[in-house]
Image (cartoon, rainbow over all chains, first blue to last red; front, side):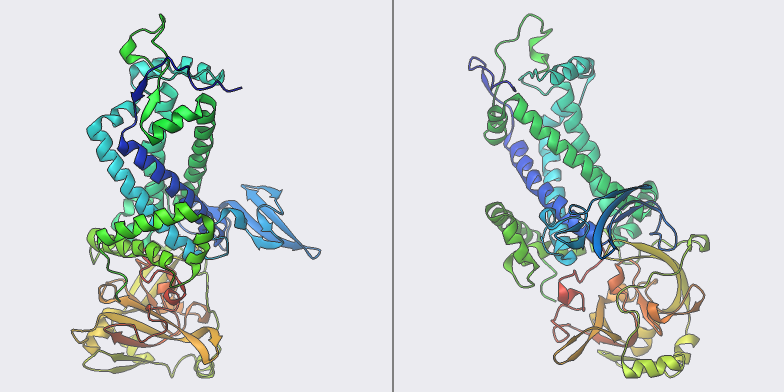
Amino acid sequence: MPPEDPPAEGNLIYRQSIWTRATHWIWAICLFFLVLTGLQIFNAYPKLEIGIESGFEYDNAVFEIGARRIDDELQGYTRLFSQEFDTTGMLGVSNGEPRAFPAAVTIPSTRSLATGRVIHFFFAWVLVGTLAIWFIASLLNGHLHDLLPRGAGFRALGRDIADHARLRFHHGRTYGALQKLSYAGVMFVLMPLMILTGLSMSPWFNAVAPWLLDLFGGRPTARTLHFLVMLLLVGFFAVHILMVLASGPLNALRSMLTGWYRIDPAPEADAASPDRKED
Amino acid sequence: MSRTPIDRRTFLRRGLVGASSLALGGCQILDSATRQESTLRNVFESASGLTHRAQRALGGDQTLAREYSRADIRQSQHPNGSVWPTGEDYREMAQDGFADFALSVTGQVETPLTLSRDALLAMPARTQITRHDCVEGWSCIAEWTGVPLGHVLDRARPRPNARYAVFHCFDAIERSLSGPVYYYESIGMVDAYHPQTILAYAMNGAPLPIPNGAPLRVRVERQLGYKMAKYIHSIELVESFAHLGHGRGSYWADRGYEWYAGI
């Protein structure tokens, strides 16, 4: 069983600034809508390819969801490289209709590429705007510094992984090594990759920055990467929620709502230096 | 076009309204955004104006779309949308290899024009190998040859109040109670005079095939495929497109797609 919130002896500290909290929840909303409208957009051409164009007379797809009719029965299939899977009912065919991702995970639930795009680009702008605000605020208030894994953090990585594996969580003033790595990975690698691969699908942006298209290896490749990074972000979200549940959901939720976080009782003897203690 | 330009403050205010109503209502509210004139949809569409403004600020007017080499043409151009206009006048013209085709240029111009197929072929031509990006998500590379639209417009001498070039087409994707709904598109004058904006009559070194828009289609290389109207019979320069279709400037814009399709 996951441990309960830490004992009441620990002090409440003000850990998350209003900038961190507000942007956190705005991103949560943005990612929700961006992913589900993204799946709607994907459904209009349910294939991921590698190259500078789509292969109509040759095959450069690495992933494809489709439907075919076999003996008057609709069969949904999902192909990853050359491996094909029967995914009838989930992918390819759902509710008896040919449709790549099912209605339950697309916004809007009906088939509407136009609406999906309009909502996708709206939240893309909100996400980019919020990231910019967060970046400036975090640079000024030192939060950016908290996220950057440094020497001591890396040395503690092994122990931190072992502790996480045993569901033994530390609640400290600063983030642990794994937390830093995953948050920094999302903020400094996945988010920029998401934005840049998204921009690489824009013919206007291709004219502005053709080098970016070359960097990713073509528009279909950028589209494939955009999808892959989405999967990584969804994976991060799943692990993030699991970790919050496992490490004390009320404490984590309070800190992301009010800023106040209860840390573990005073450092024990094994902590090298109290002010640099990794949680 | 009153709905595209929008300042940042309006965008933020509408954004807040939008975000809060979403948090309250969840997905059910979002299905209502498929309706053209819902408030929620207007909120979301406010971002499209921002995209257009960002393009003008960042892109400059004259940046060129990537041009590819012959070696990059590995297949024929994938046709989409209408591929075979059914109108009587079009079918007759097609039987004669479009010898009788003439393009008319009308609207806010000093000199309305009618240009025969031969006259178009005799004008300076540009050939470019570019990538066609469909709104659905696919891309296809082909070589296009045609008259720069700017040459044609210069001959017609646009009036100062001409803001958009509207392309009227032979093809009708659907039929309404009052008859066929003909395809139309429009672009701003900046894109109309962009060096790569051409009225293409040839593709991959051969006359433009019917599925790809014969006798004449426009190439607008920094926007998505639906802007590049096929089967064009006339170009109308207008100050506003309020009087056309549902007033949003294009067949697909009338059906909820962005008028500005650079993204």
